[in-house]
Length: 205
Image 1 (cartoon, one colour):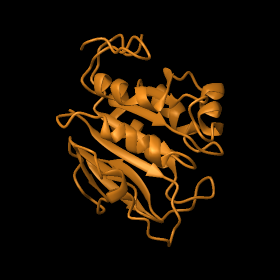
Image 2 (image 1 turned 90 degrees about the vertical axis):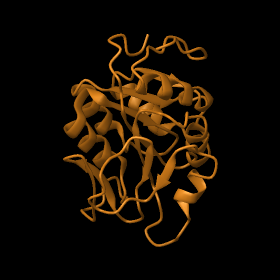
Image 3 (image 1 turned 135 degrees about the horizontal axis):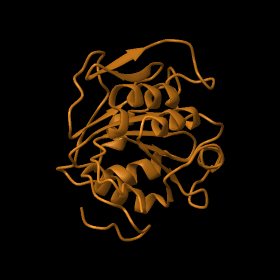
C-alpha cells in the first residue's frame, strides 16, 4: 500500500537517462488532463545538440509541456522540462535554472531537482526514477524520503538500462517498483491523495 496517509503528492519530479525517453512519454500520455499537480522532468541531455525534447515529450501529453524560464511560477497542470546545460530547481514557488557545476558528469542532473523539491515542498513530493546508467537521482531520493515524500522507480525488469533504478532500490527505501505502463496510474492516484495498492489496479482516492 502506497500513501496510506492519503496525502496529496502534487509536486511530481521525474528523472531519467539512457532508455528513458519512451517510458517517460508513456507516463505523460497516460496522465489525466485535470491532474492536480505540477511535474518537472530532468533527462540527461547533450549540452549543445538540440533535440526538441519538450515537443517530443508533449506530443500526446494532455498537459502543457514547456522548457521554463528562470523564475517561472510553479503551476499545476504544467510539465517543466529541464533545458540543455542547466540544472533545474524549485525555490519559493518558482522554477530556478542555473549553470552550476555538473553533477554525475552532467548538466542538467536529476539530484539537484529532487533535492530542491524536497526542501521546498517536503511531503508533497513524489519522485519517479526511470531507466539510466550511473547513480543520479539516488541521493535525491534519500532527501525526498527524509522529508516525508514518496519515491517510485521503473521496474528494473522493464528498464532498458536498469542501473539507476537498481541503485535506488539498493540504497533507499523506495515505495514501489512499477512497469512504465503502471507508473501513470500510480502518479495520477497519488497526486490526488489516493492510495495505490496494486501494481495493476490502483485503489480509488
